[in-house]
Image: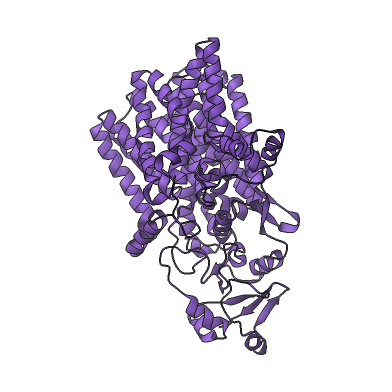
Length: 633
C-alpha cells in the first residue's frame, strides 16, 4: 500500500515540477524540460512534505500523512492548472506545441546523453553502495564516514519517526545540517523500498539530471553546439590533475605500470587525508560520498540558467525577483554551501546587468527563506555559529604536521593545464556571453586562494560546483578548435582533451577496483533487527561512540554518539555512571536501554557492571557481540 502511495506521490512531484518549469522556462529543449521538471518538482515538494510531516508528528506516522497531504494539495494544483491550460489551448493551435516537443526527443545526441547519464550514474552509485547477503550493506572504502552519518539520518526518520528532525547521535539536541535529500530517501525507505535502492535511485536520478544540466549549459548560456555540451560532461566525470603523470614519474613507463594502473585498488592520491598534494576532492568521490551534493548543484545550476534566460528575454519583474530569492533560499536545507554560492552568483549577475530593483527583491526573498530555515536553530544561535566555525576554520593537520605545499604547486598539481584551456575558451567566447562566465571565474579564484588558508586545500562542495563553470568554458574552447575543421586544430583539441581527462580516467579505474567495506556486517544485523522491532521508535540508548552505530542504524537515538553538532557537550561522565549501574541517572535522562559491546573494543573507555544488570534481570538481548539492558521506569 505504501509503495503505491510513493508511486503516486512521485508522479505528482514530477507533474508539479513540470507546471513550475513551464512557467519559468517555457521554451526549453525537451530533455532539459524533463530534467528541469524532475529537479524543480523534488526541490519544492520535499520541503512541503517535511513541513506537513512535522504538523502530523502527533499521529505517530508523520511521513504517511506528509505524503498524503502533499498528494491532496498537488492534485488540486494540477486540476486548476489543467483547466487554465485547456482554456489557453482553445485559443491557440495545440499541434505546434506538440510538434515542438516531439522534435527534441528525436535528436540522437540528446538520446545518447540521456542513456549515458543513467548508465554511468547507475554504475558509480551502485559500485559505492550495495547490498550483501542477509541484509548486509557495503560502501566504498573512502565513503564509510559519510555513509555512517547519511544512513543513520535516513533511518532515524524512516524507522524512528524522528520528525521534526533532531540529532540521532546526540539525543535531545538539534542537528544543524542540510537534510532534505536524506528526508527524500527516508520517504522511499519508509514506503518499503530496500535501503540500497532507496539511496541509489534518488542518487542516480540526481547525478543524471546534473549531467543533463551540464550538457545544456554551453547551449543555453553561451549559444554553443551540442559537442561543447558533451565535452563539458566528459570533463565533469574526469579531471585535469597530474595524477597520471605523477604515477608515471613514480613507477616509470612500462607495461607493468599500466597493469598496476588498471588494478588500482583506491585513489593513488587522496589529499589532504593521505598527505598528498593532489586532492581527492577533485574526483567523483565527492558525489558518491555525499549523495545530496549532485542534487543541490543541479538545482543551483538550473536556477542560474533560468535567471539568465529571464534576463535575456526581459521577463524579470520584482515579483519574480522575490520568487527566485525564495527558491535560492530553499536550497539552504538541501545544501547550505551551494545555497550561499548560488545566491552569490545570481547576486553578481544582477549587478552586471544593473537590475538594482530586482536585486533588492531577490535579497529579501532569499534572506526570508534562509531565516525560516534557521528558525529551529535560533535558540542555539551562538552554538550554531561555533559549530560552523569549527567545520570551516582552522589549520589542516595530518599526522601531526601542516602540509608544506605552496599555492602555485597545489594549483598546478590539481588543475594542470585547465586554466590555460579555460582562458582560451573565455577569449573565443563572444563578448556578450563572457559576463555569464565571470561570476564562476570570480568565485573560483577566491576558492583557489582560500585553499592556501590553513593549508586546507579545496572545499569539496564549493570546488565541485565552481569547477563545472570552468569546465564548461574550457569545453567551449575545445569545441571552437573542432569547428575549424583543420587538421592541426583537431590535433590541438585532442591533446587538450587528453591532458584534461587522463588523470580522471585513472581515478575511475580506482573507483572500479575499490574495496567494499561493510557498513552493516552480518554480526550487526541481529541486534539492529531486534532494536527496530522490539523497542519504541522514540527510545534513547546509552551506547558506544562509533561512526558505524547499531543504535542509530536501527532508527533509534544514541545519548552520546559519534557525530557532534549544535549543543554538543561532554556527556561521558553520565555514560560512565550509567554503565556502572547508575539507573537513577538513566531514568532522569529519559534513557530506555543500555547497549554494551561483548568484545574488547579498543576505544570503549567504560567499565560495564554486567553483574549488576544480570542480578536485576535487566538483560533483554544478548549475542556474541552485543548485550542490551532495559532501564525500565
